[in-house]
Length: 221
Image (cartoon, rainbow, N blue to C red):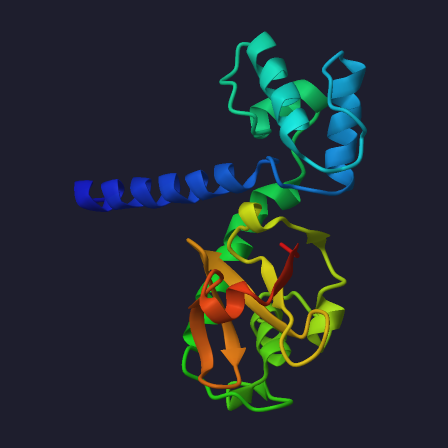
């Protein structure tokens, strides 16, 4: 095995590990039953988290930081593998360690269809409507969404505007009240969706059109 090949292999492994380490974490903005259990555990140890409501907010973040300081860890407020092990007494759930790969696959697949025309009722690369597009992209990663935007909005957990992550579904009120348009968040305030005017395209959440119509976001991954 050549030195160059060994170096390249090491970099690939390191990159893969870094992605998993990033994904295997709970942090501010997360919501759900897992967070409620973490809050209960912190509270039982004497760290103030407020109500165990399953919402990882500032109070919970500060409790995590205090716990990390007491354990001699970096007090970043993020519950990674080491913090989770010390706090909960077990390894972090596997699903948290595999989500980075799925997120990357979803966002990469989403970009493949840039420019595909809008077709009302469309569900294939021959033409998509907004929810047909998100459903198709997620299905390629083995994640099956309902057919319509309003039904997709019922999935996962709510995510605040300022805690969006790649792969989150973002919703807008357009032709009908409620979540009538859906797209996939990318990064840096950008999302991709199938628009009636230009087909599948990348847009900004804070643009004049979308910014005033933003409805909310759901985390599926």
